[in-house]
Length: 339
Image (tube, rainbow, N blue to C red; front, side, top):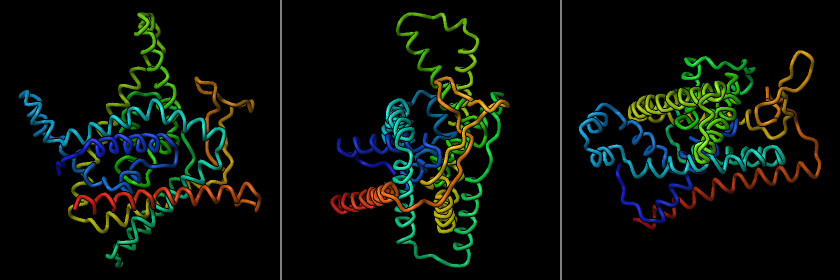
């Protein structure tokens, strides 16, 4: 699965990582969809499943170059570099856009998912009773998840570790939004806002030579929570990749049909016309996170009225579809050029 990559290929891998990272942080959007549509999903899963006992032996024996080649290190390194950059930059821009232009952002995502469904199903020829059933079940599960009520926040470290495992589902299972799962588990703000802000503050303190944070129990607790969450995420990423690599080899058509179902079901999460329901205390006052933003509890969906704003939203849906079709065209053009 190792490939010779030009500088242009490497830059595009970083950009794809940026897109995956941004998508993973937005509730309702799956980074796995980006990997699927951009044409590197199977290489991504294959590379992750090479993180196994053989890789551990190479690491312990100090054979770092062999380890790098074995796990497709250049591919994973560039992709994760993009994700990390995205986590600390592009995702911040998305946060701003969702707050200020929520309808248009969700419309674009809705269009991208519609385009993804077309992309995945247009060349799929193995429709039969099994794959149709898999499609239907995947859609029902995806849709059912989108209408569940969120739980309360829980910073128990074992639960945080479990959240880490579950949160990476969006990277390995197209259509499953890891960040939306965290909302349902009640820990989206704790793990993707509060703990990350604690890391920001800690890095800033270290660079300024201020180590007083070591005496701040709340800060240390947040850093511990983030560490356990990261450990759980890595565990989940490797575990899911091994499982998916196996089923893609042995049940590829059923797996692809199920993934298509997940993506169809996720349309309920990214439906553009919805009212955000924020959490309140027993007195009806809004609950704020550490950044002063209101904490989201769920969404109330509705059918739009025909207004100029609705037409603009529909144009953004068309833009989302065009983005996916453009990615598809680019992928085909690149493959043809190489051959």
